[in-house]
Length: 329
Image 1 (cartoon, rainbow, N blue to C red):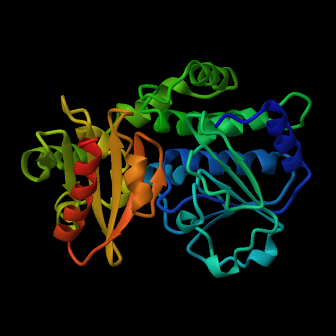
Image 2 (image 1 turned 90 degrees about the vertical axis):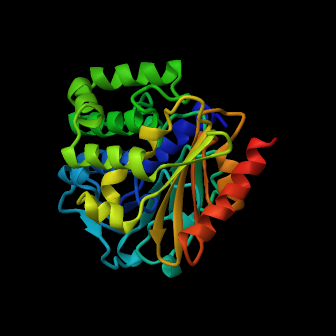
């Protein structure tokens, strides 16, 4: 769904009339969520507005350089001290990393997102599923002609990071001519393209390399004539390689490149079940359909959900049943 320039301009101008923001994203935020959150915060701070950001857990090490004195983790921040709550890159209320869901009210809430299955849980919703990333939408908001937004180097770098991570370094199917033009625009605005690319795609701790090798040799499972590959990223594997769950963003993209593979998945234990990340290499086999059936969501080629289960075997069997049904279409 592509929204009109008129609606975009209205949102850009509307945000400028507000103050005292709390900015949130989805649980277990990825690079686009984190980049867009800090980009919006910086843009608001430049204009002299109050803007706090909140995450329900500590950020992965590679993003910690963005943390500032207006960043909160896990603390219970009363909604009353903020006039406006803006959520970024979150498709539904269930995934929202809020300070207290019981106190969340639709009044004075704004949702900006690019997920096509966004449930429009806020009072004001701007959803552009044609955008490759929420960071791309923010760039559109900040560059509406006649507005007072400013884009400095920090903002440009945050938005570039979000776009690169949600497009696999401008390699995934969601990369369009518009994406490439906006990437060039961010470079013109001061973004450090080459250092960012090197940091994301050409720099890797040795422990991550040993983890990847161990996965391929000992833990990766294949099914349905090698059309489906999946991994249970257990606590034991993480401990063996001294890696945390937060360090494994993008790990699924390591083995989704297997020749002939259609769908890849990663299981991670969480509370009384398993979080599942899925990727599809073929839009004819959209994994967001499976995620939606399991109370999750996402895009055709990248989606996630949660499977309540006592053990991995039960979660594995349940997901495989959905995968088989999708592949048999």
